[in-house]
Amino acid sequence: MDIRVDTTLDPDGAPRPRRLCFDDRRIDVAEVRDRWDGRAYRYYKLIGEDRNVYILRCDEPQNKWTLVLYRSEAEEAAQLHGRDKQRFH
Image 1 (cartoon, rainbow, N blue to C red):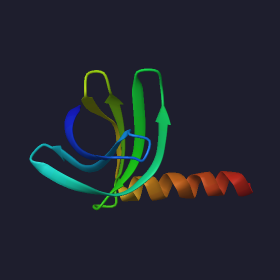
Image 2 (cartoon, helix red, strand yellow; image 1 turned 90 degrees about the vertical axis):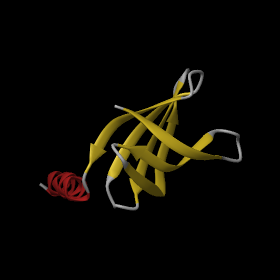
Image 3 (cartoon, rainbow, N blue to C red; image 1 turned 60 degrees about the vertical axis):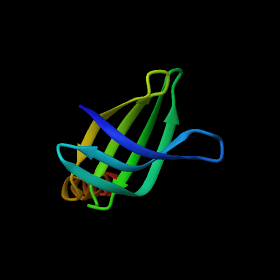
C-alpha cells in the first residue's frame, strides 16, 4: 500500500519518518524501532502513537513510501509472548 510519510532528516541525511498518512488517517511516529538499508531501499520499523507496529519501505530514488507490514499492538504482544514461550520450552 502506498502511503504519504512526513519526514525529518537523520544526522546522516537519511529521511526519518515522523507521521504516516493513509486512508484519511494521520498517525504520528512515537518511536523508530529499527532501520535497515538496501541498495535502493531503506526500511523502517516504527511504533505509532496508536501503539501499533508499522514497517515501511522508502524507495529513495523515487521518493516513494510503501507500507510493508502493519501489526496491531495486541498482535505484536502475542507474537513476542509466543517467542518467549518457545525460548523457555
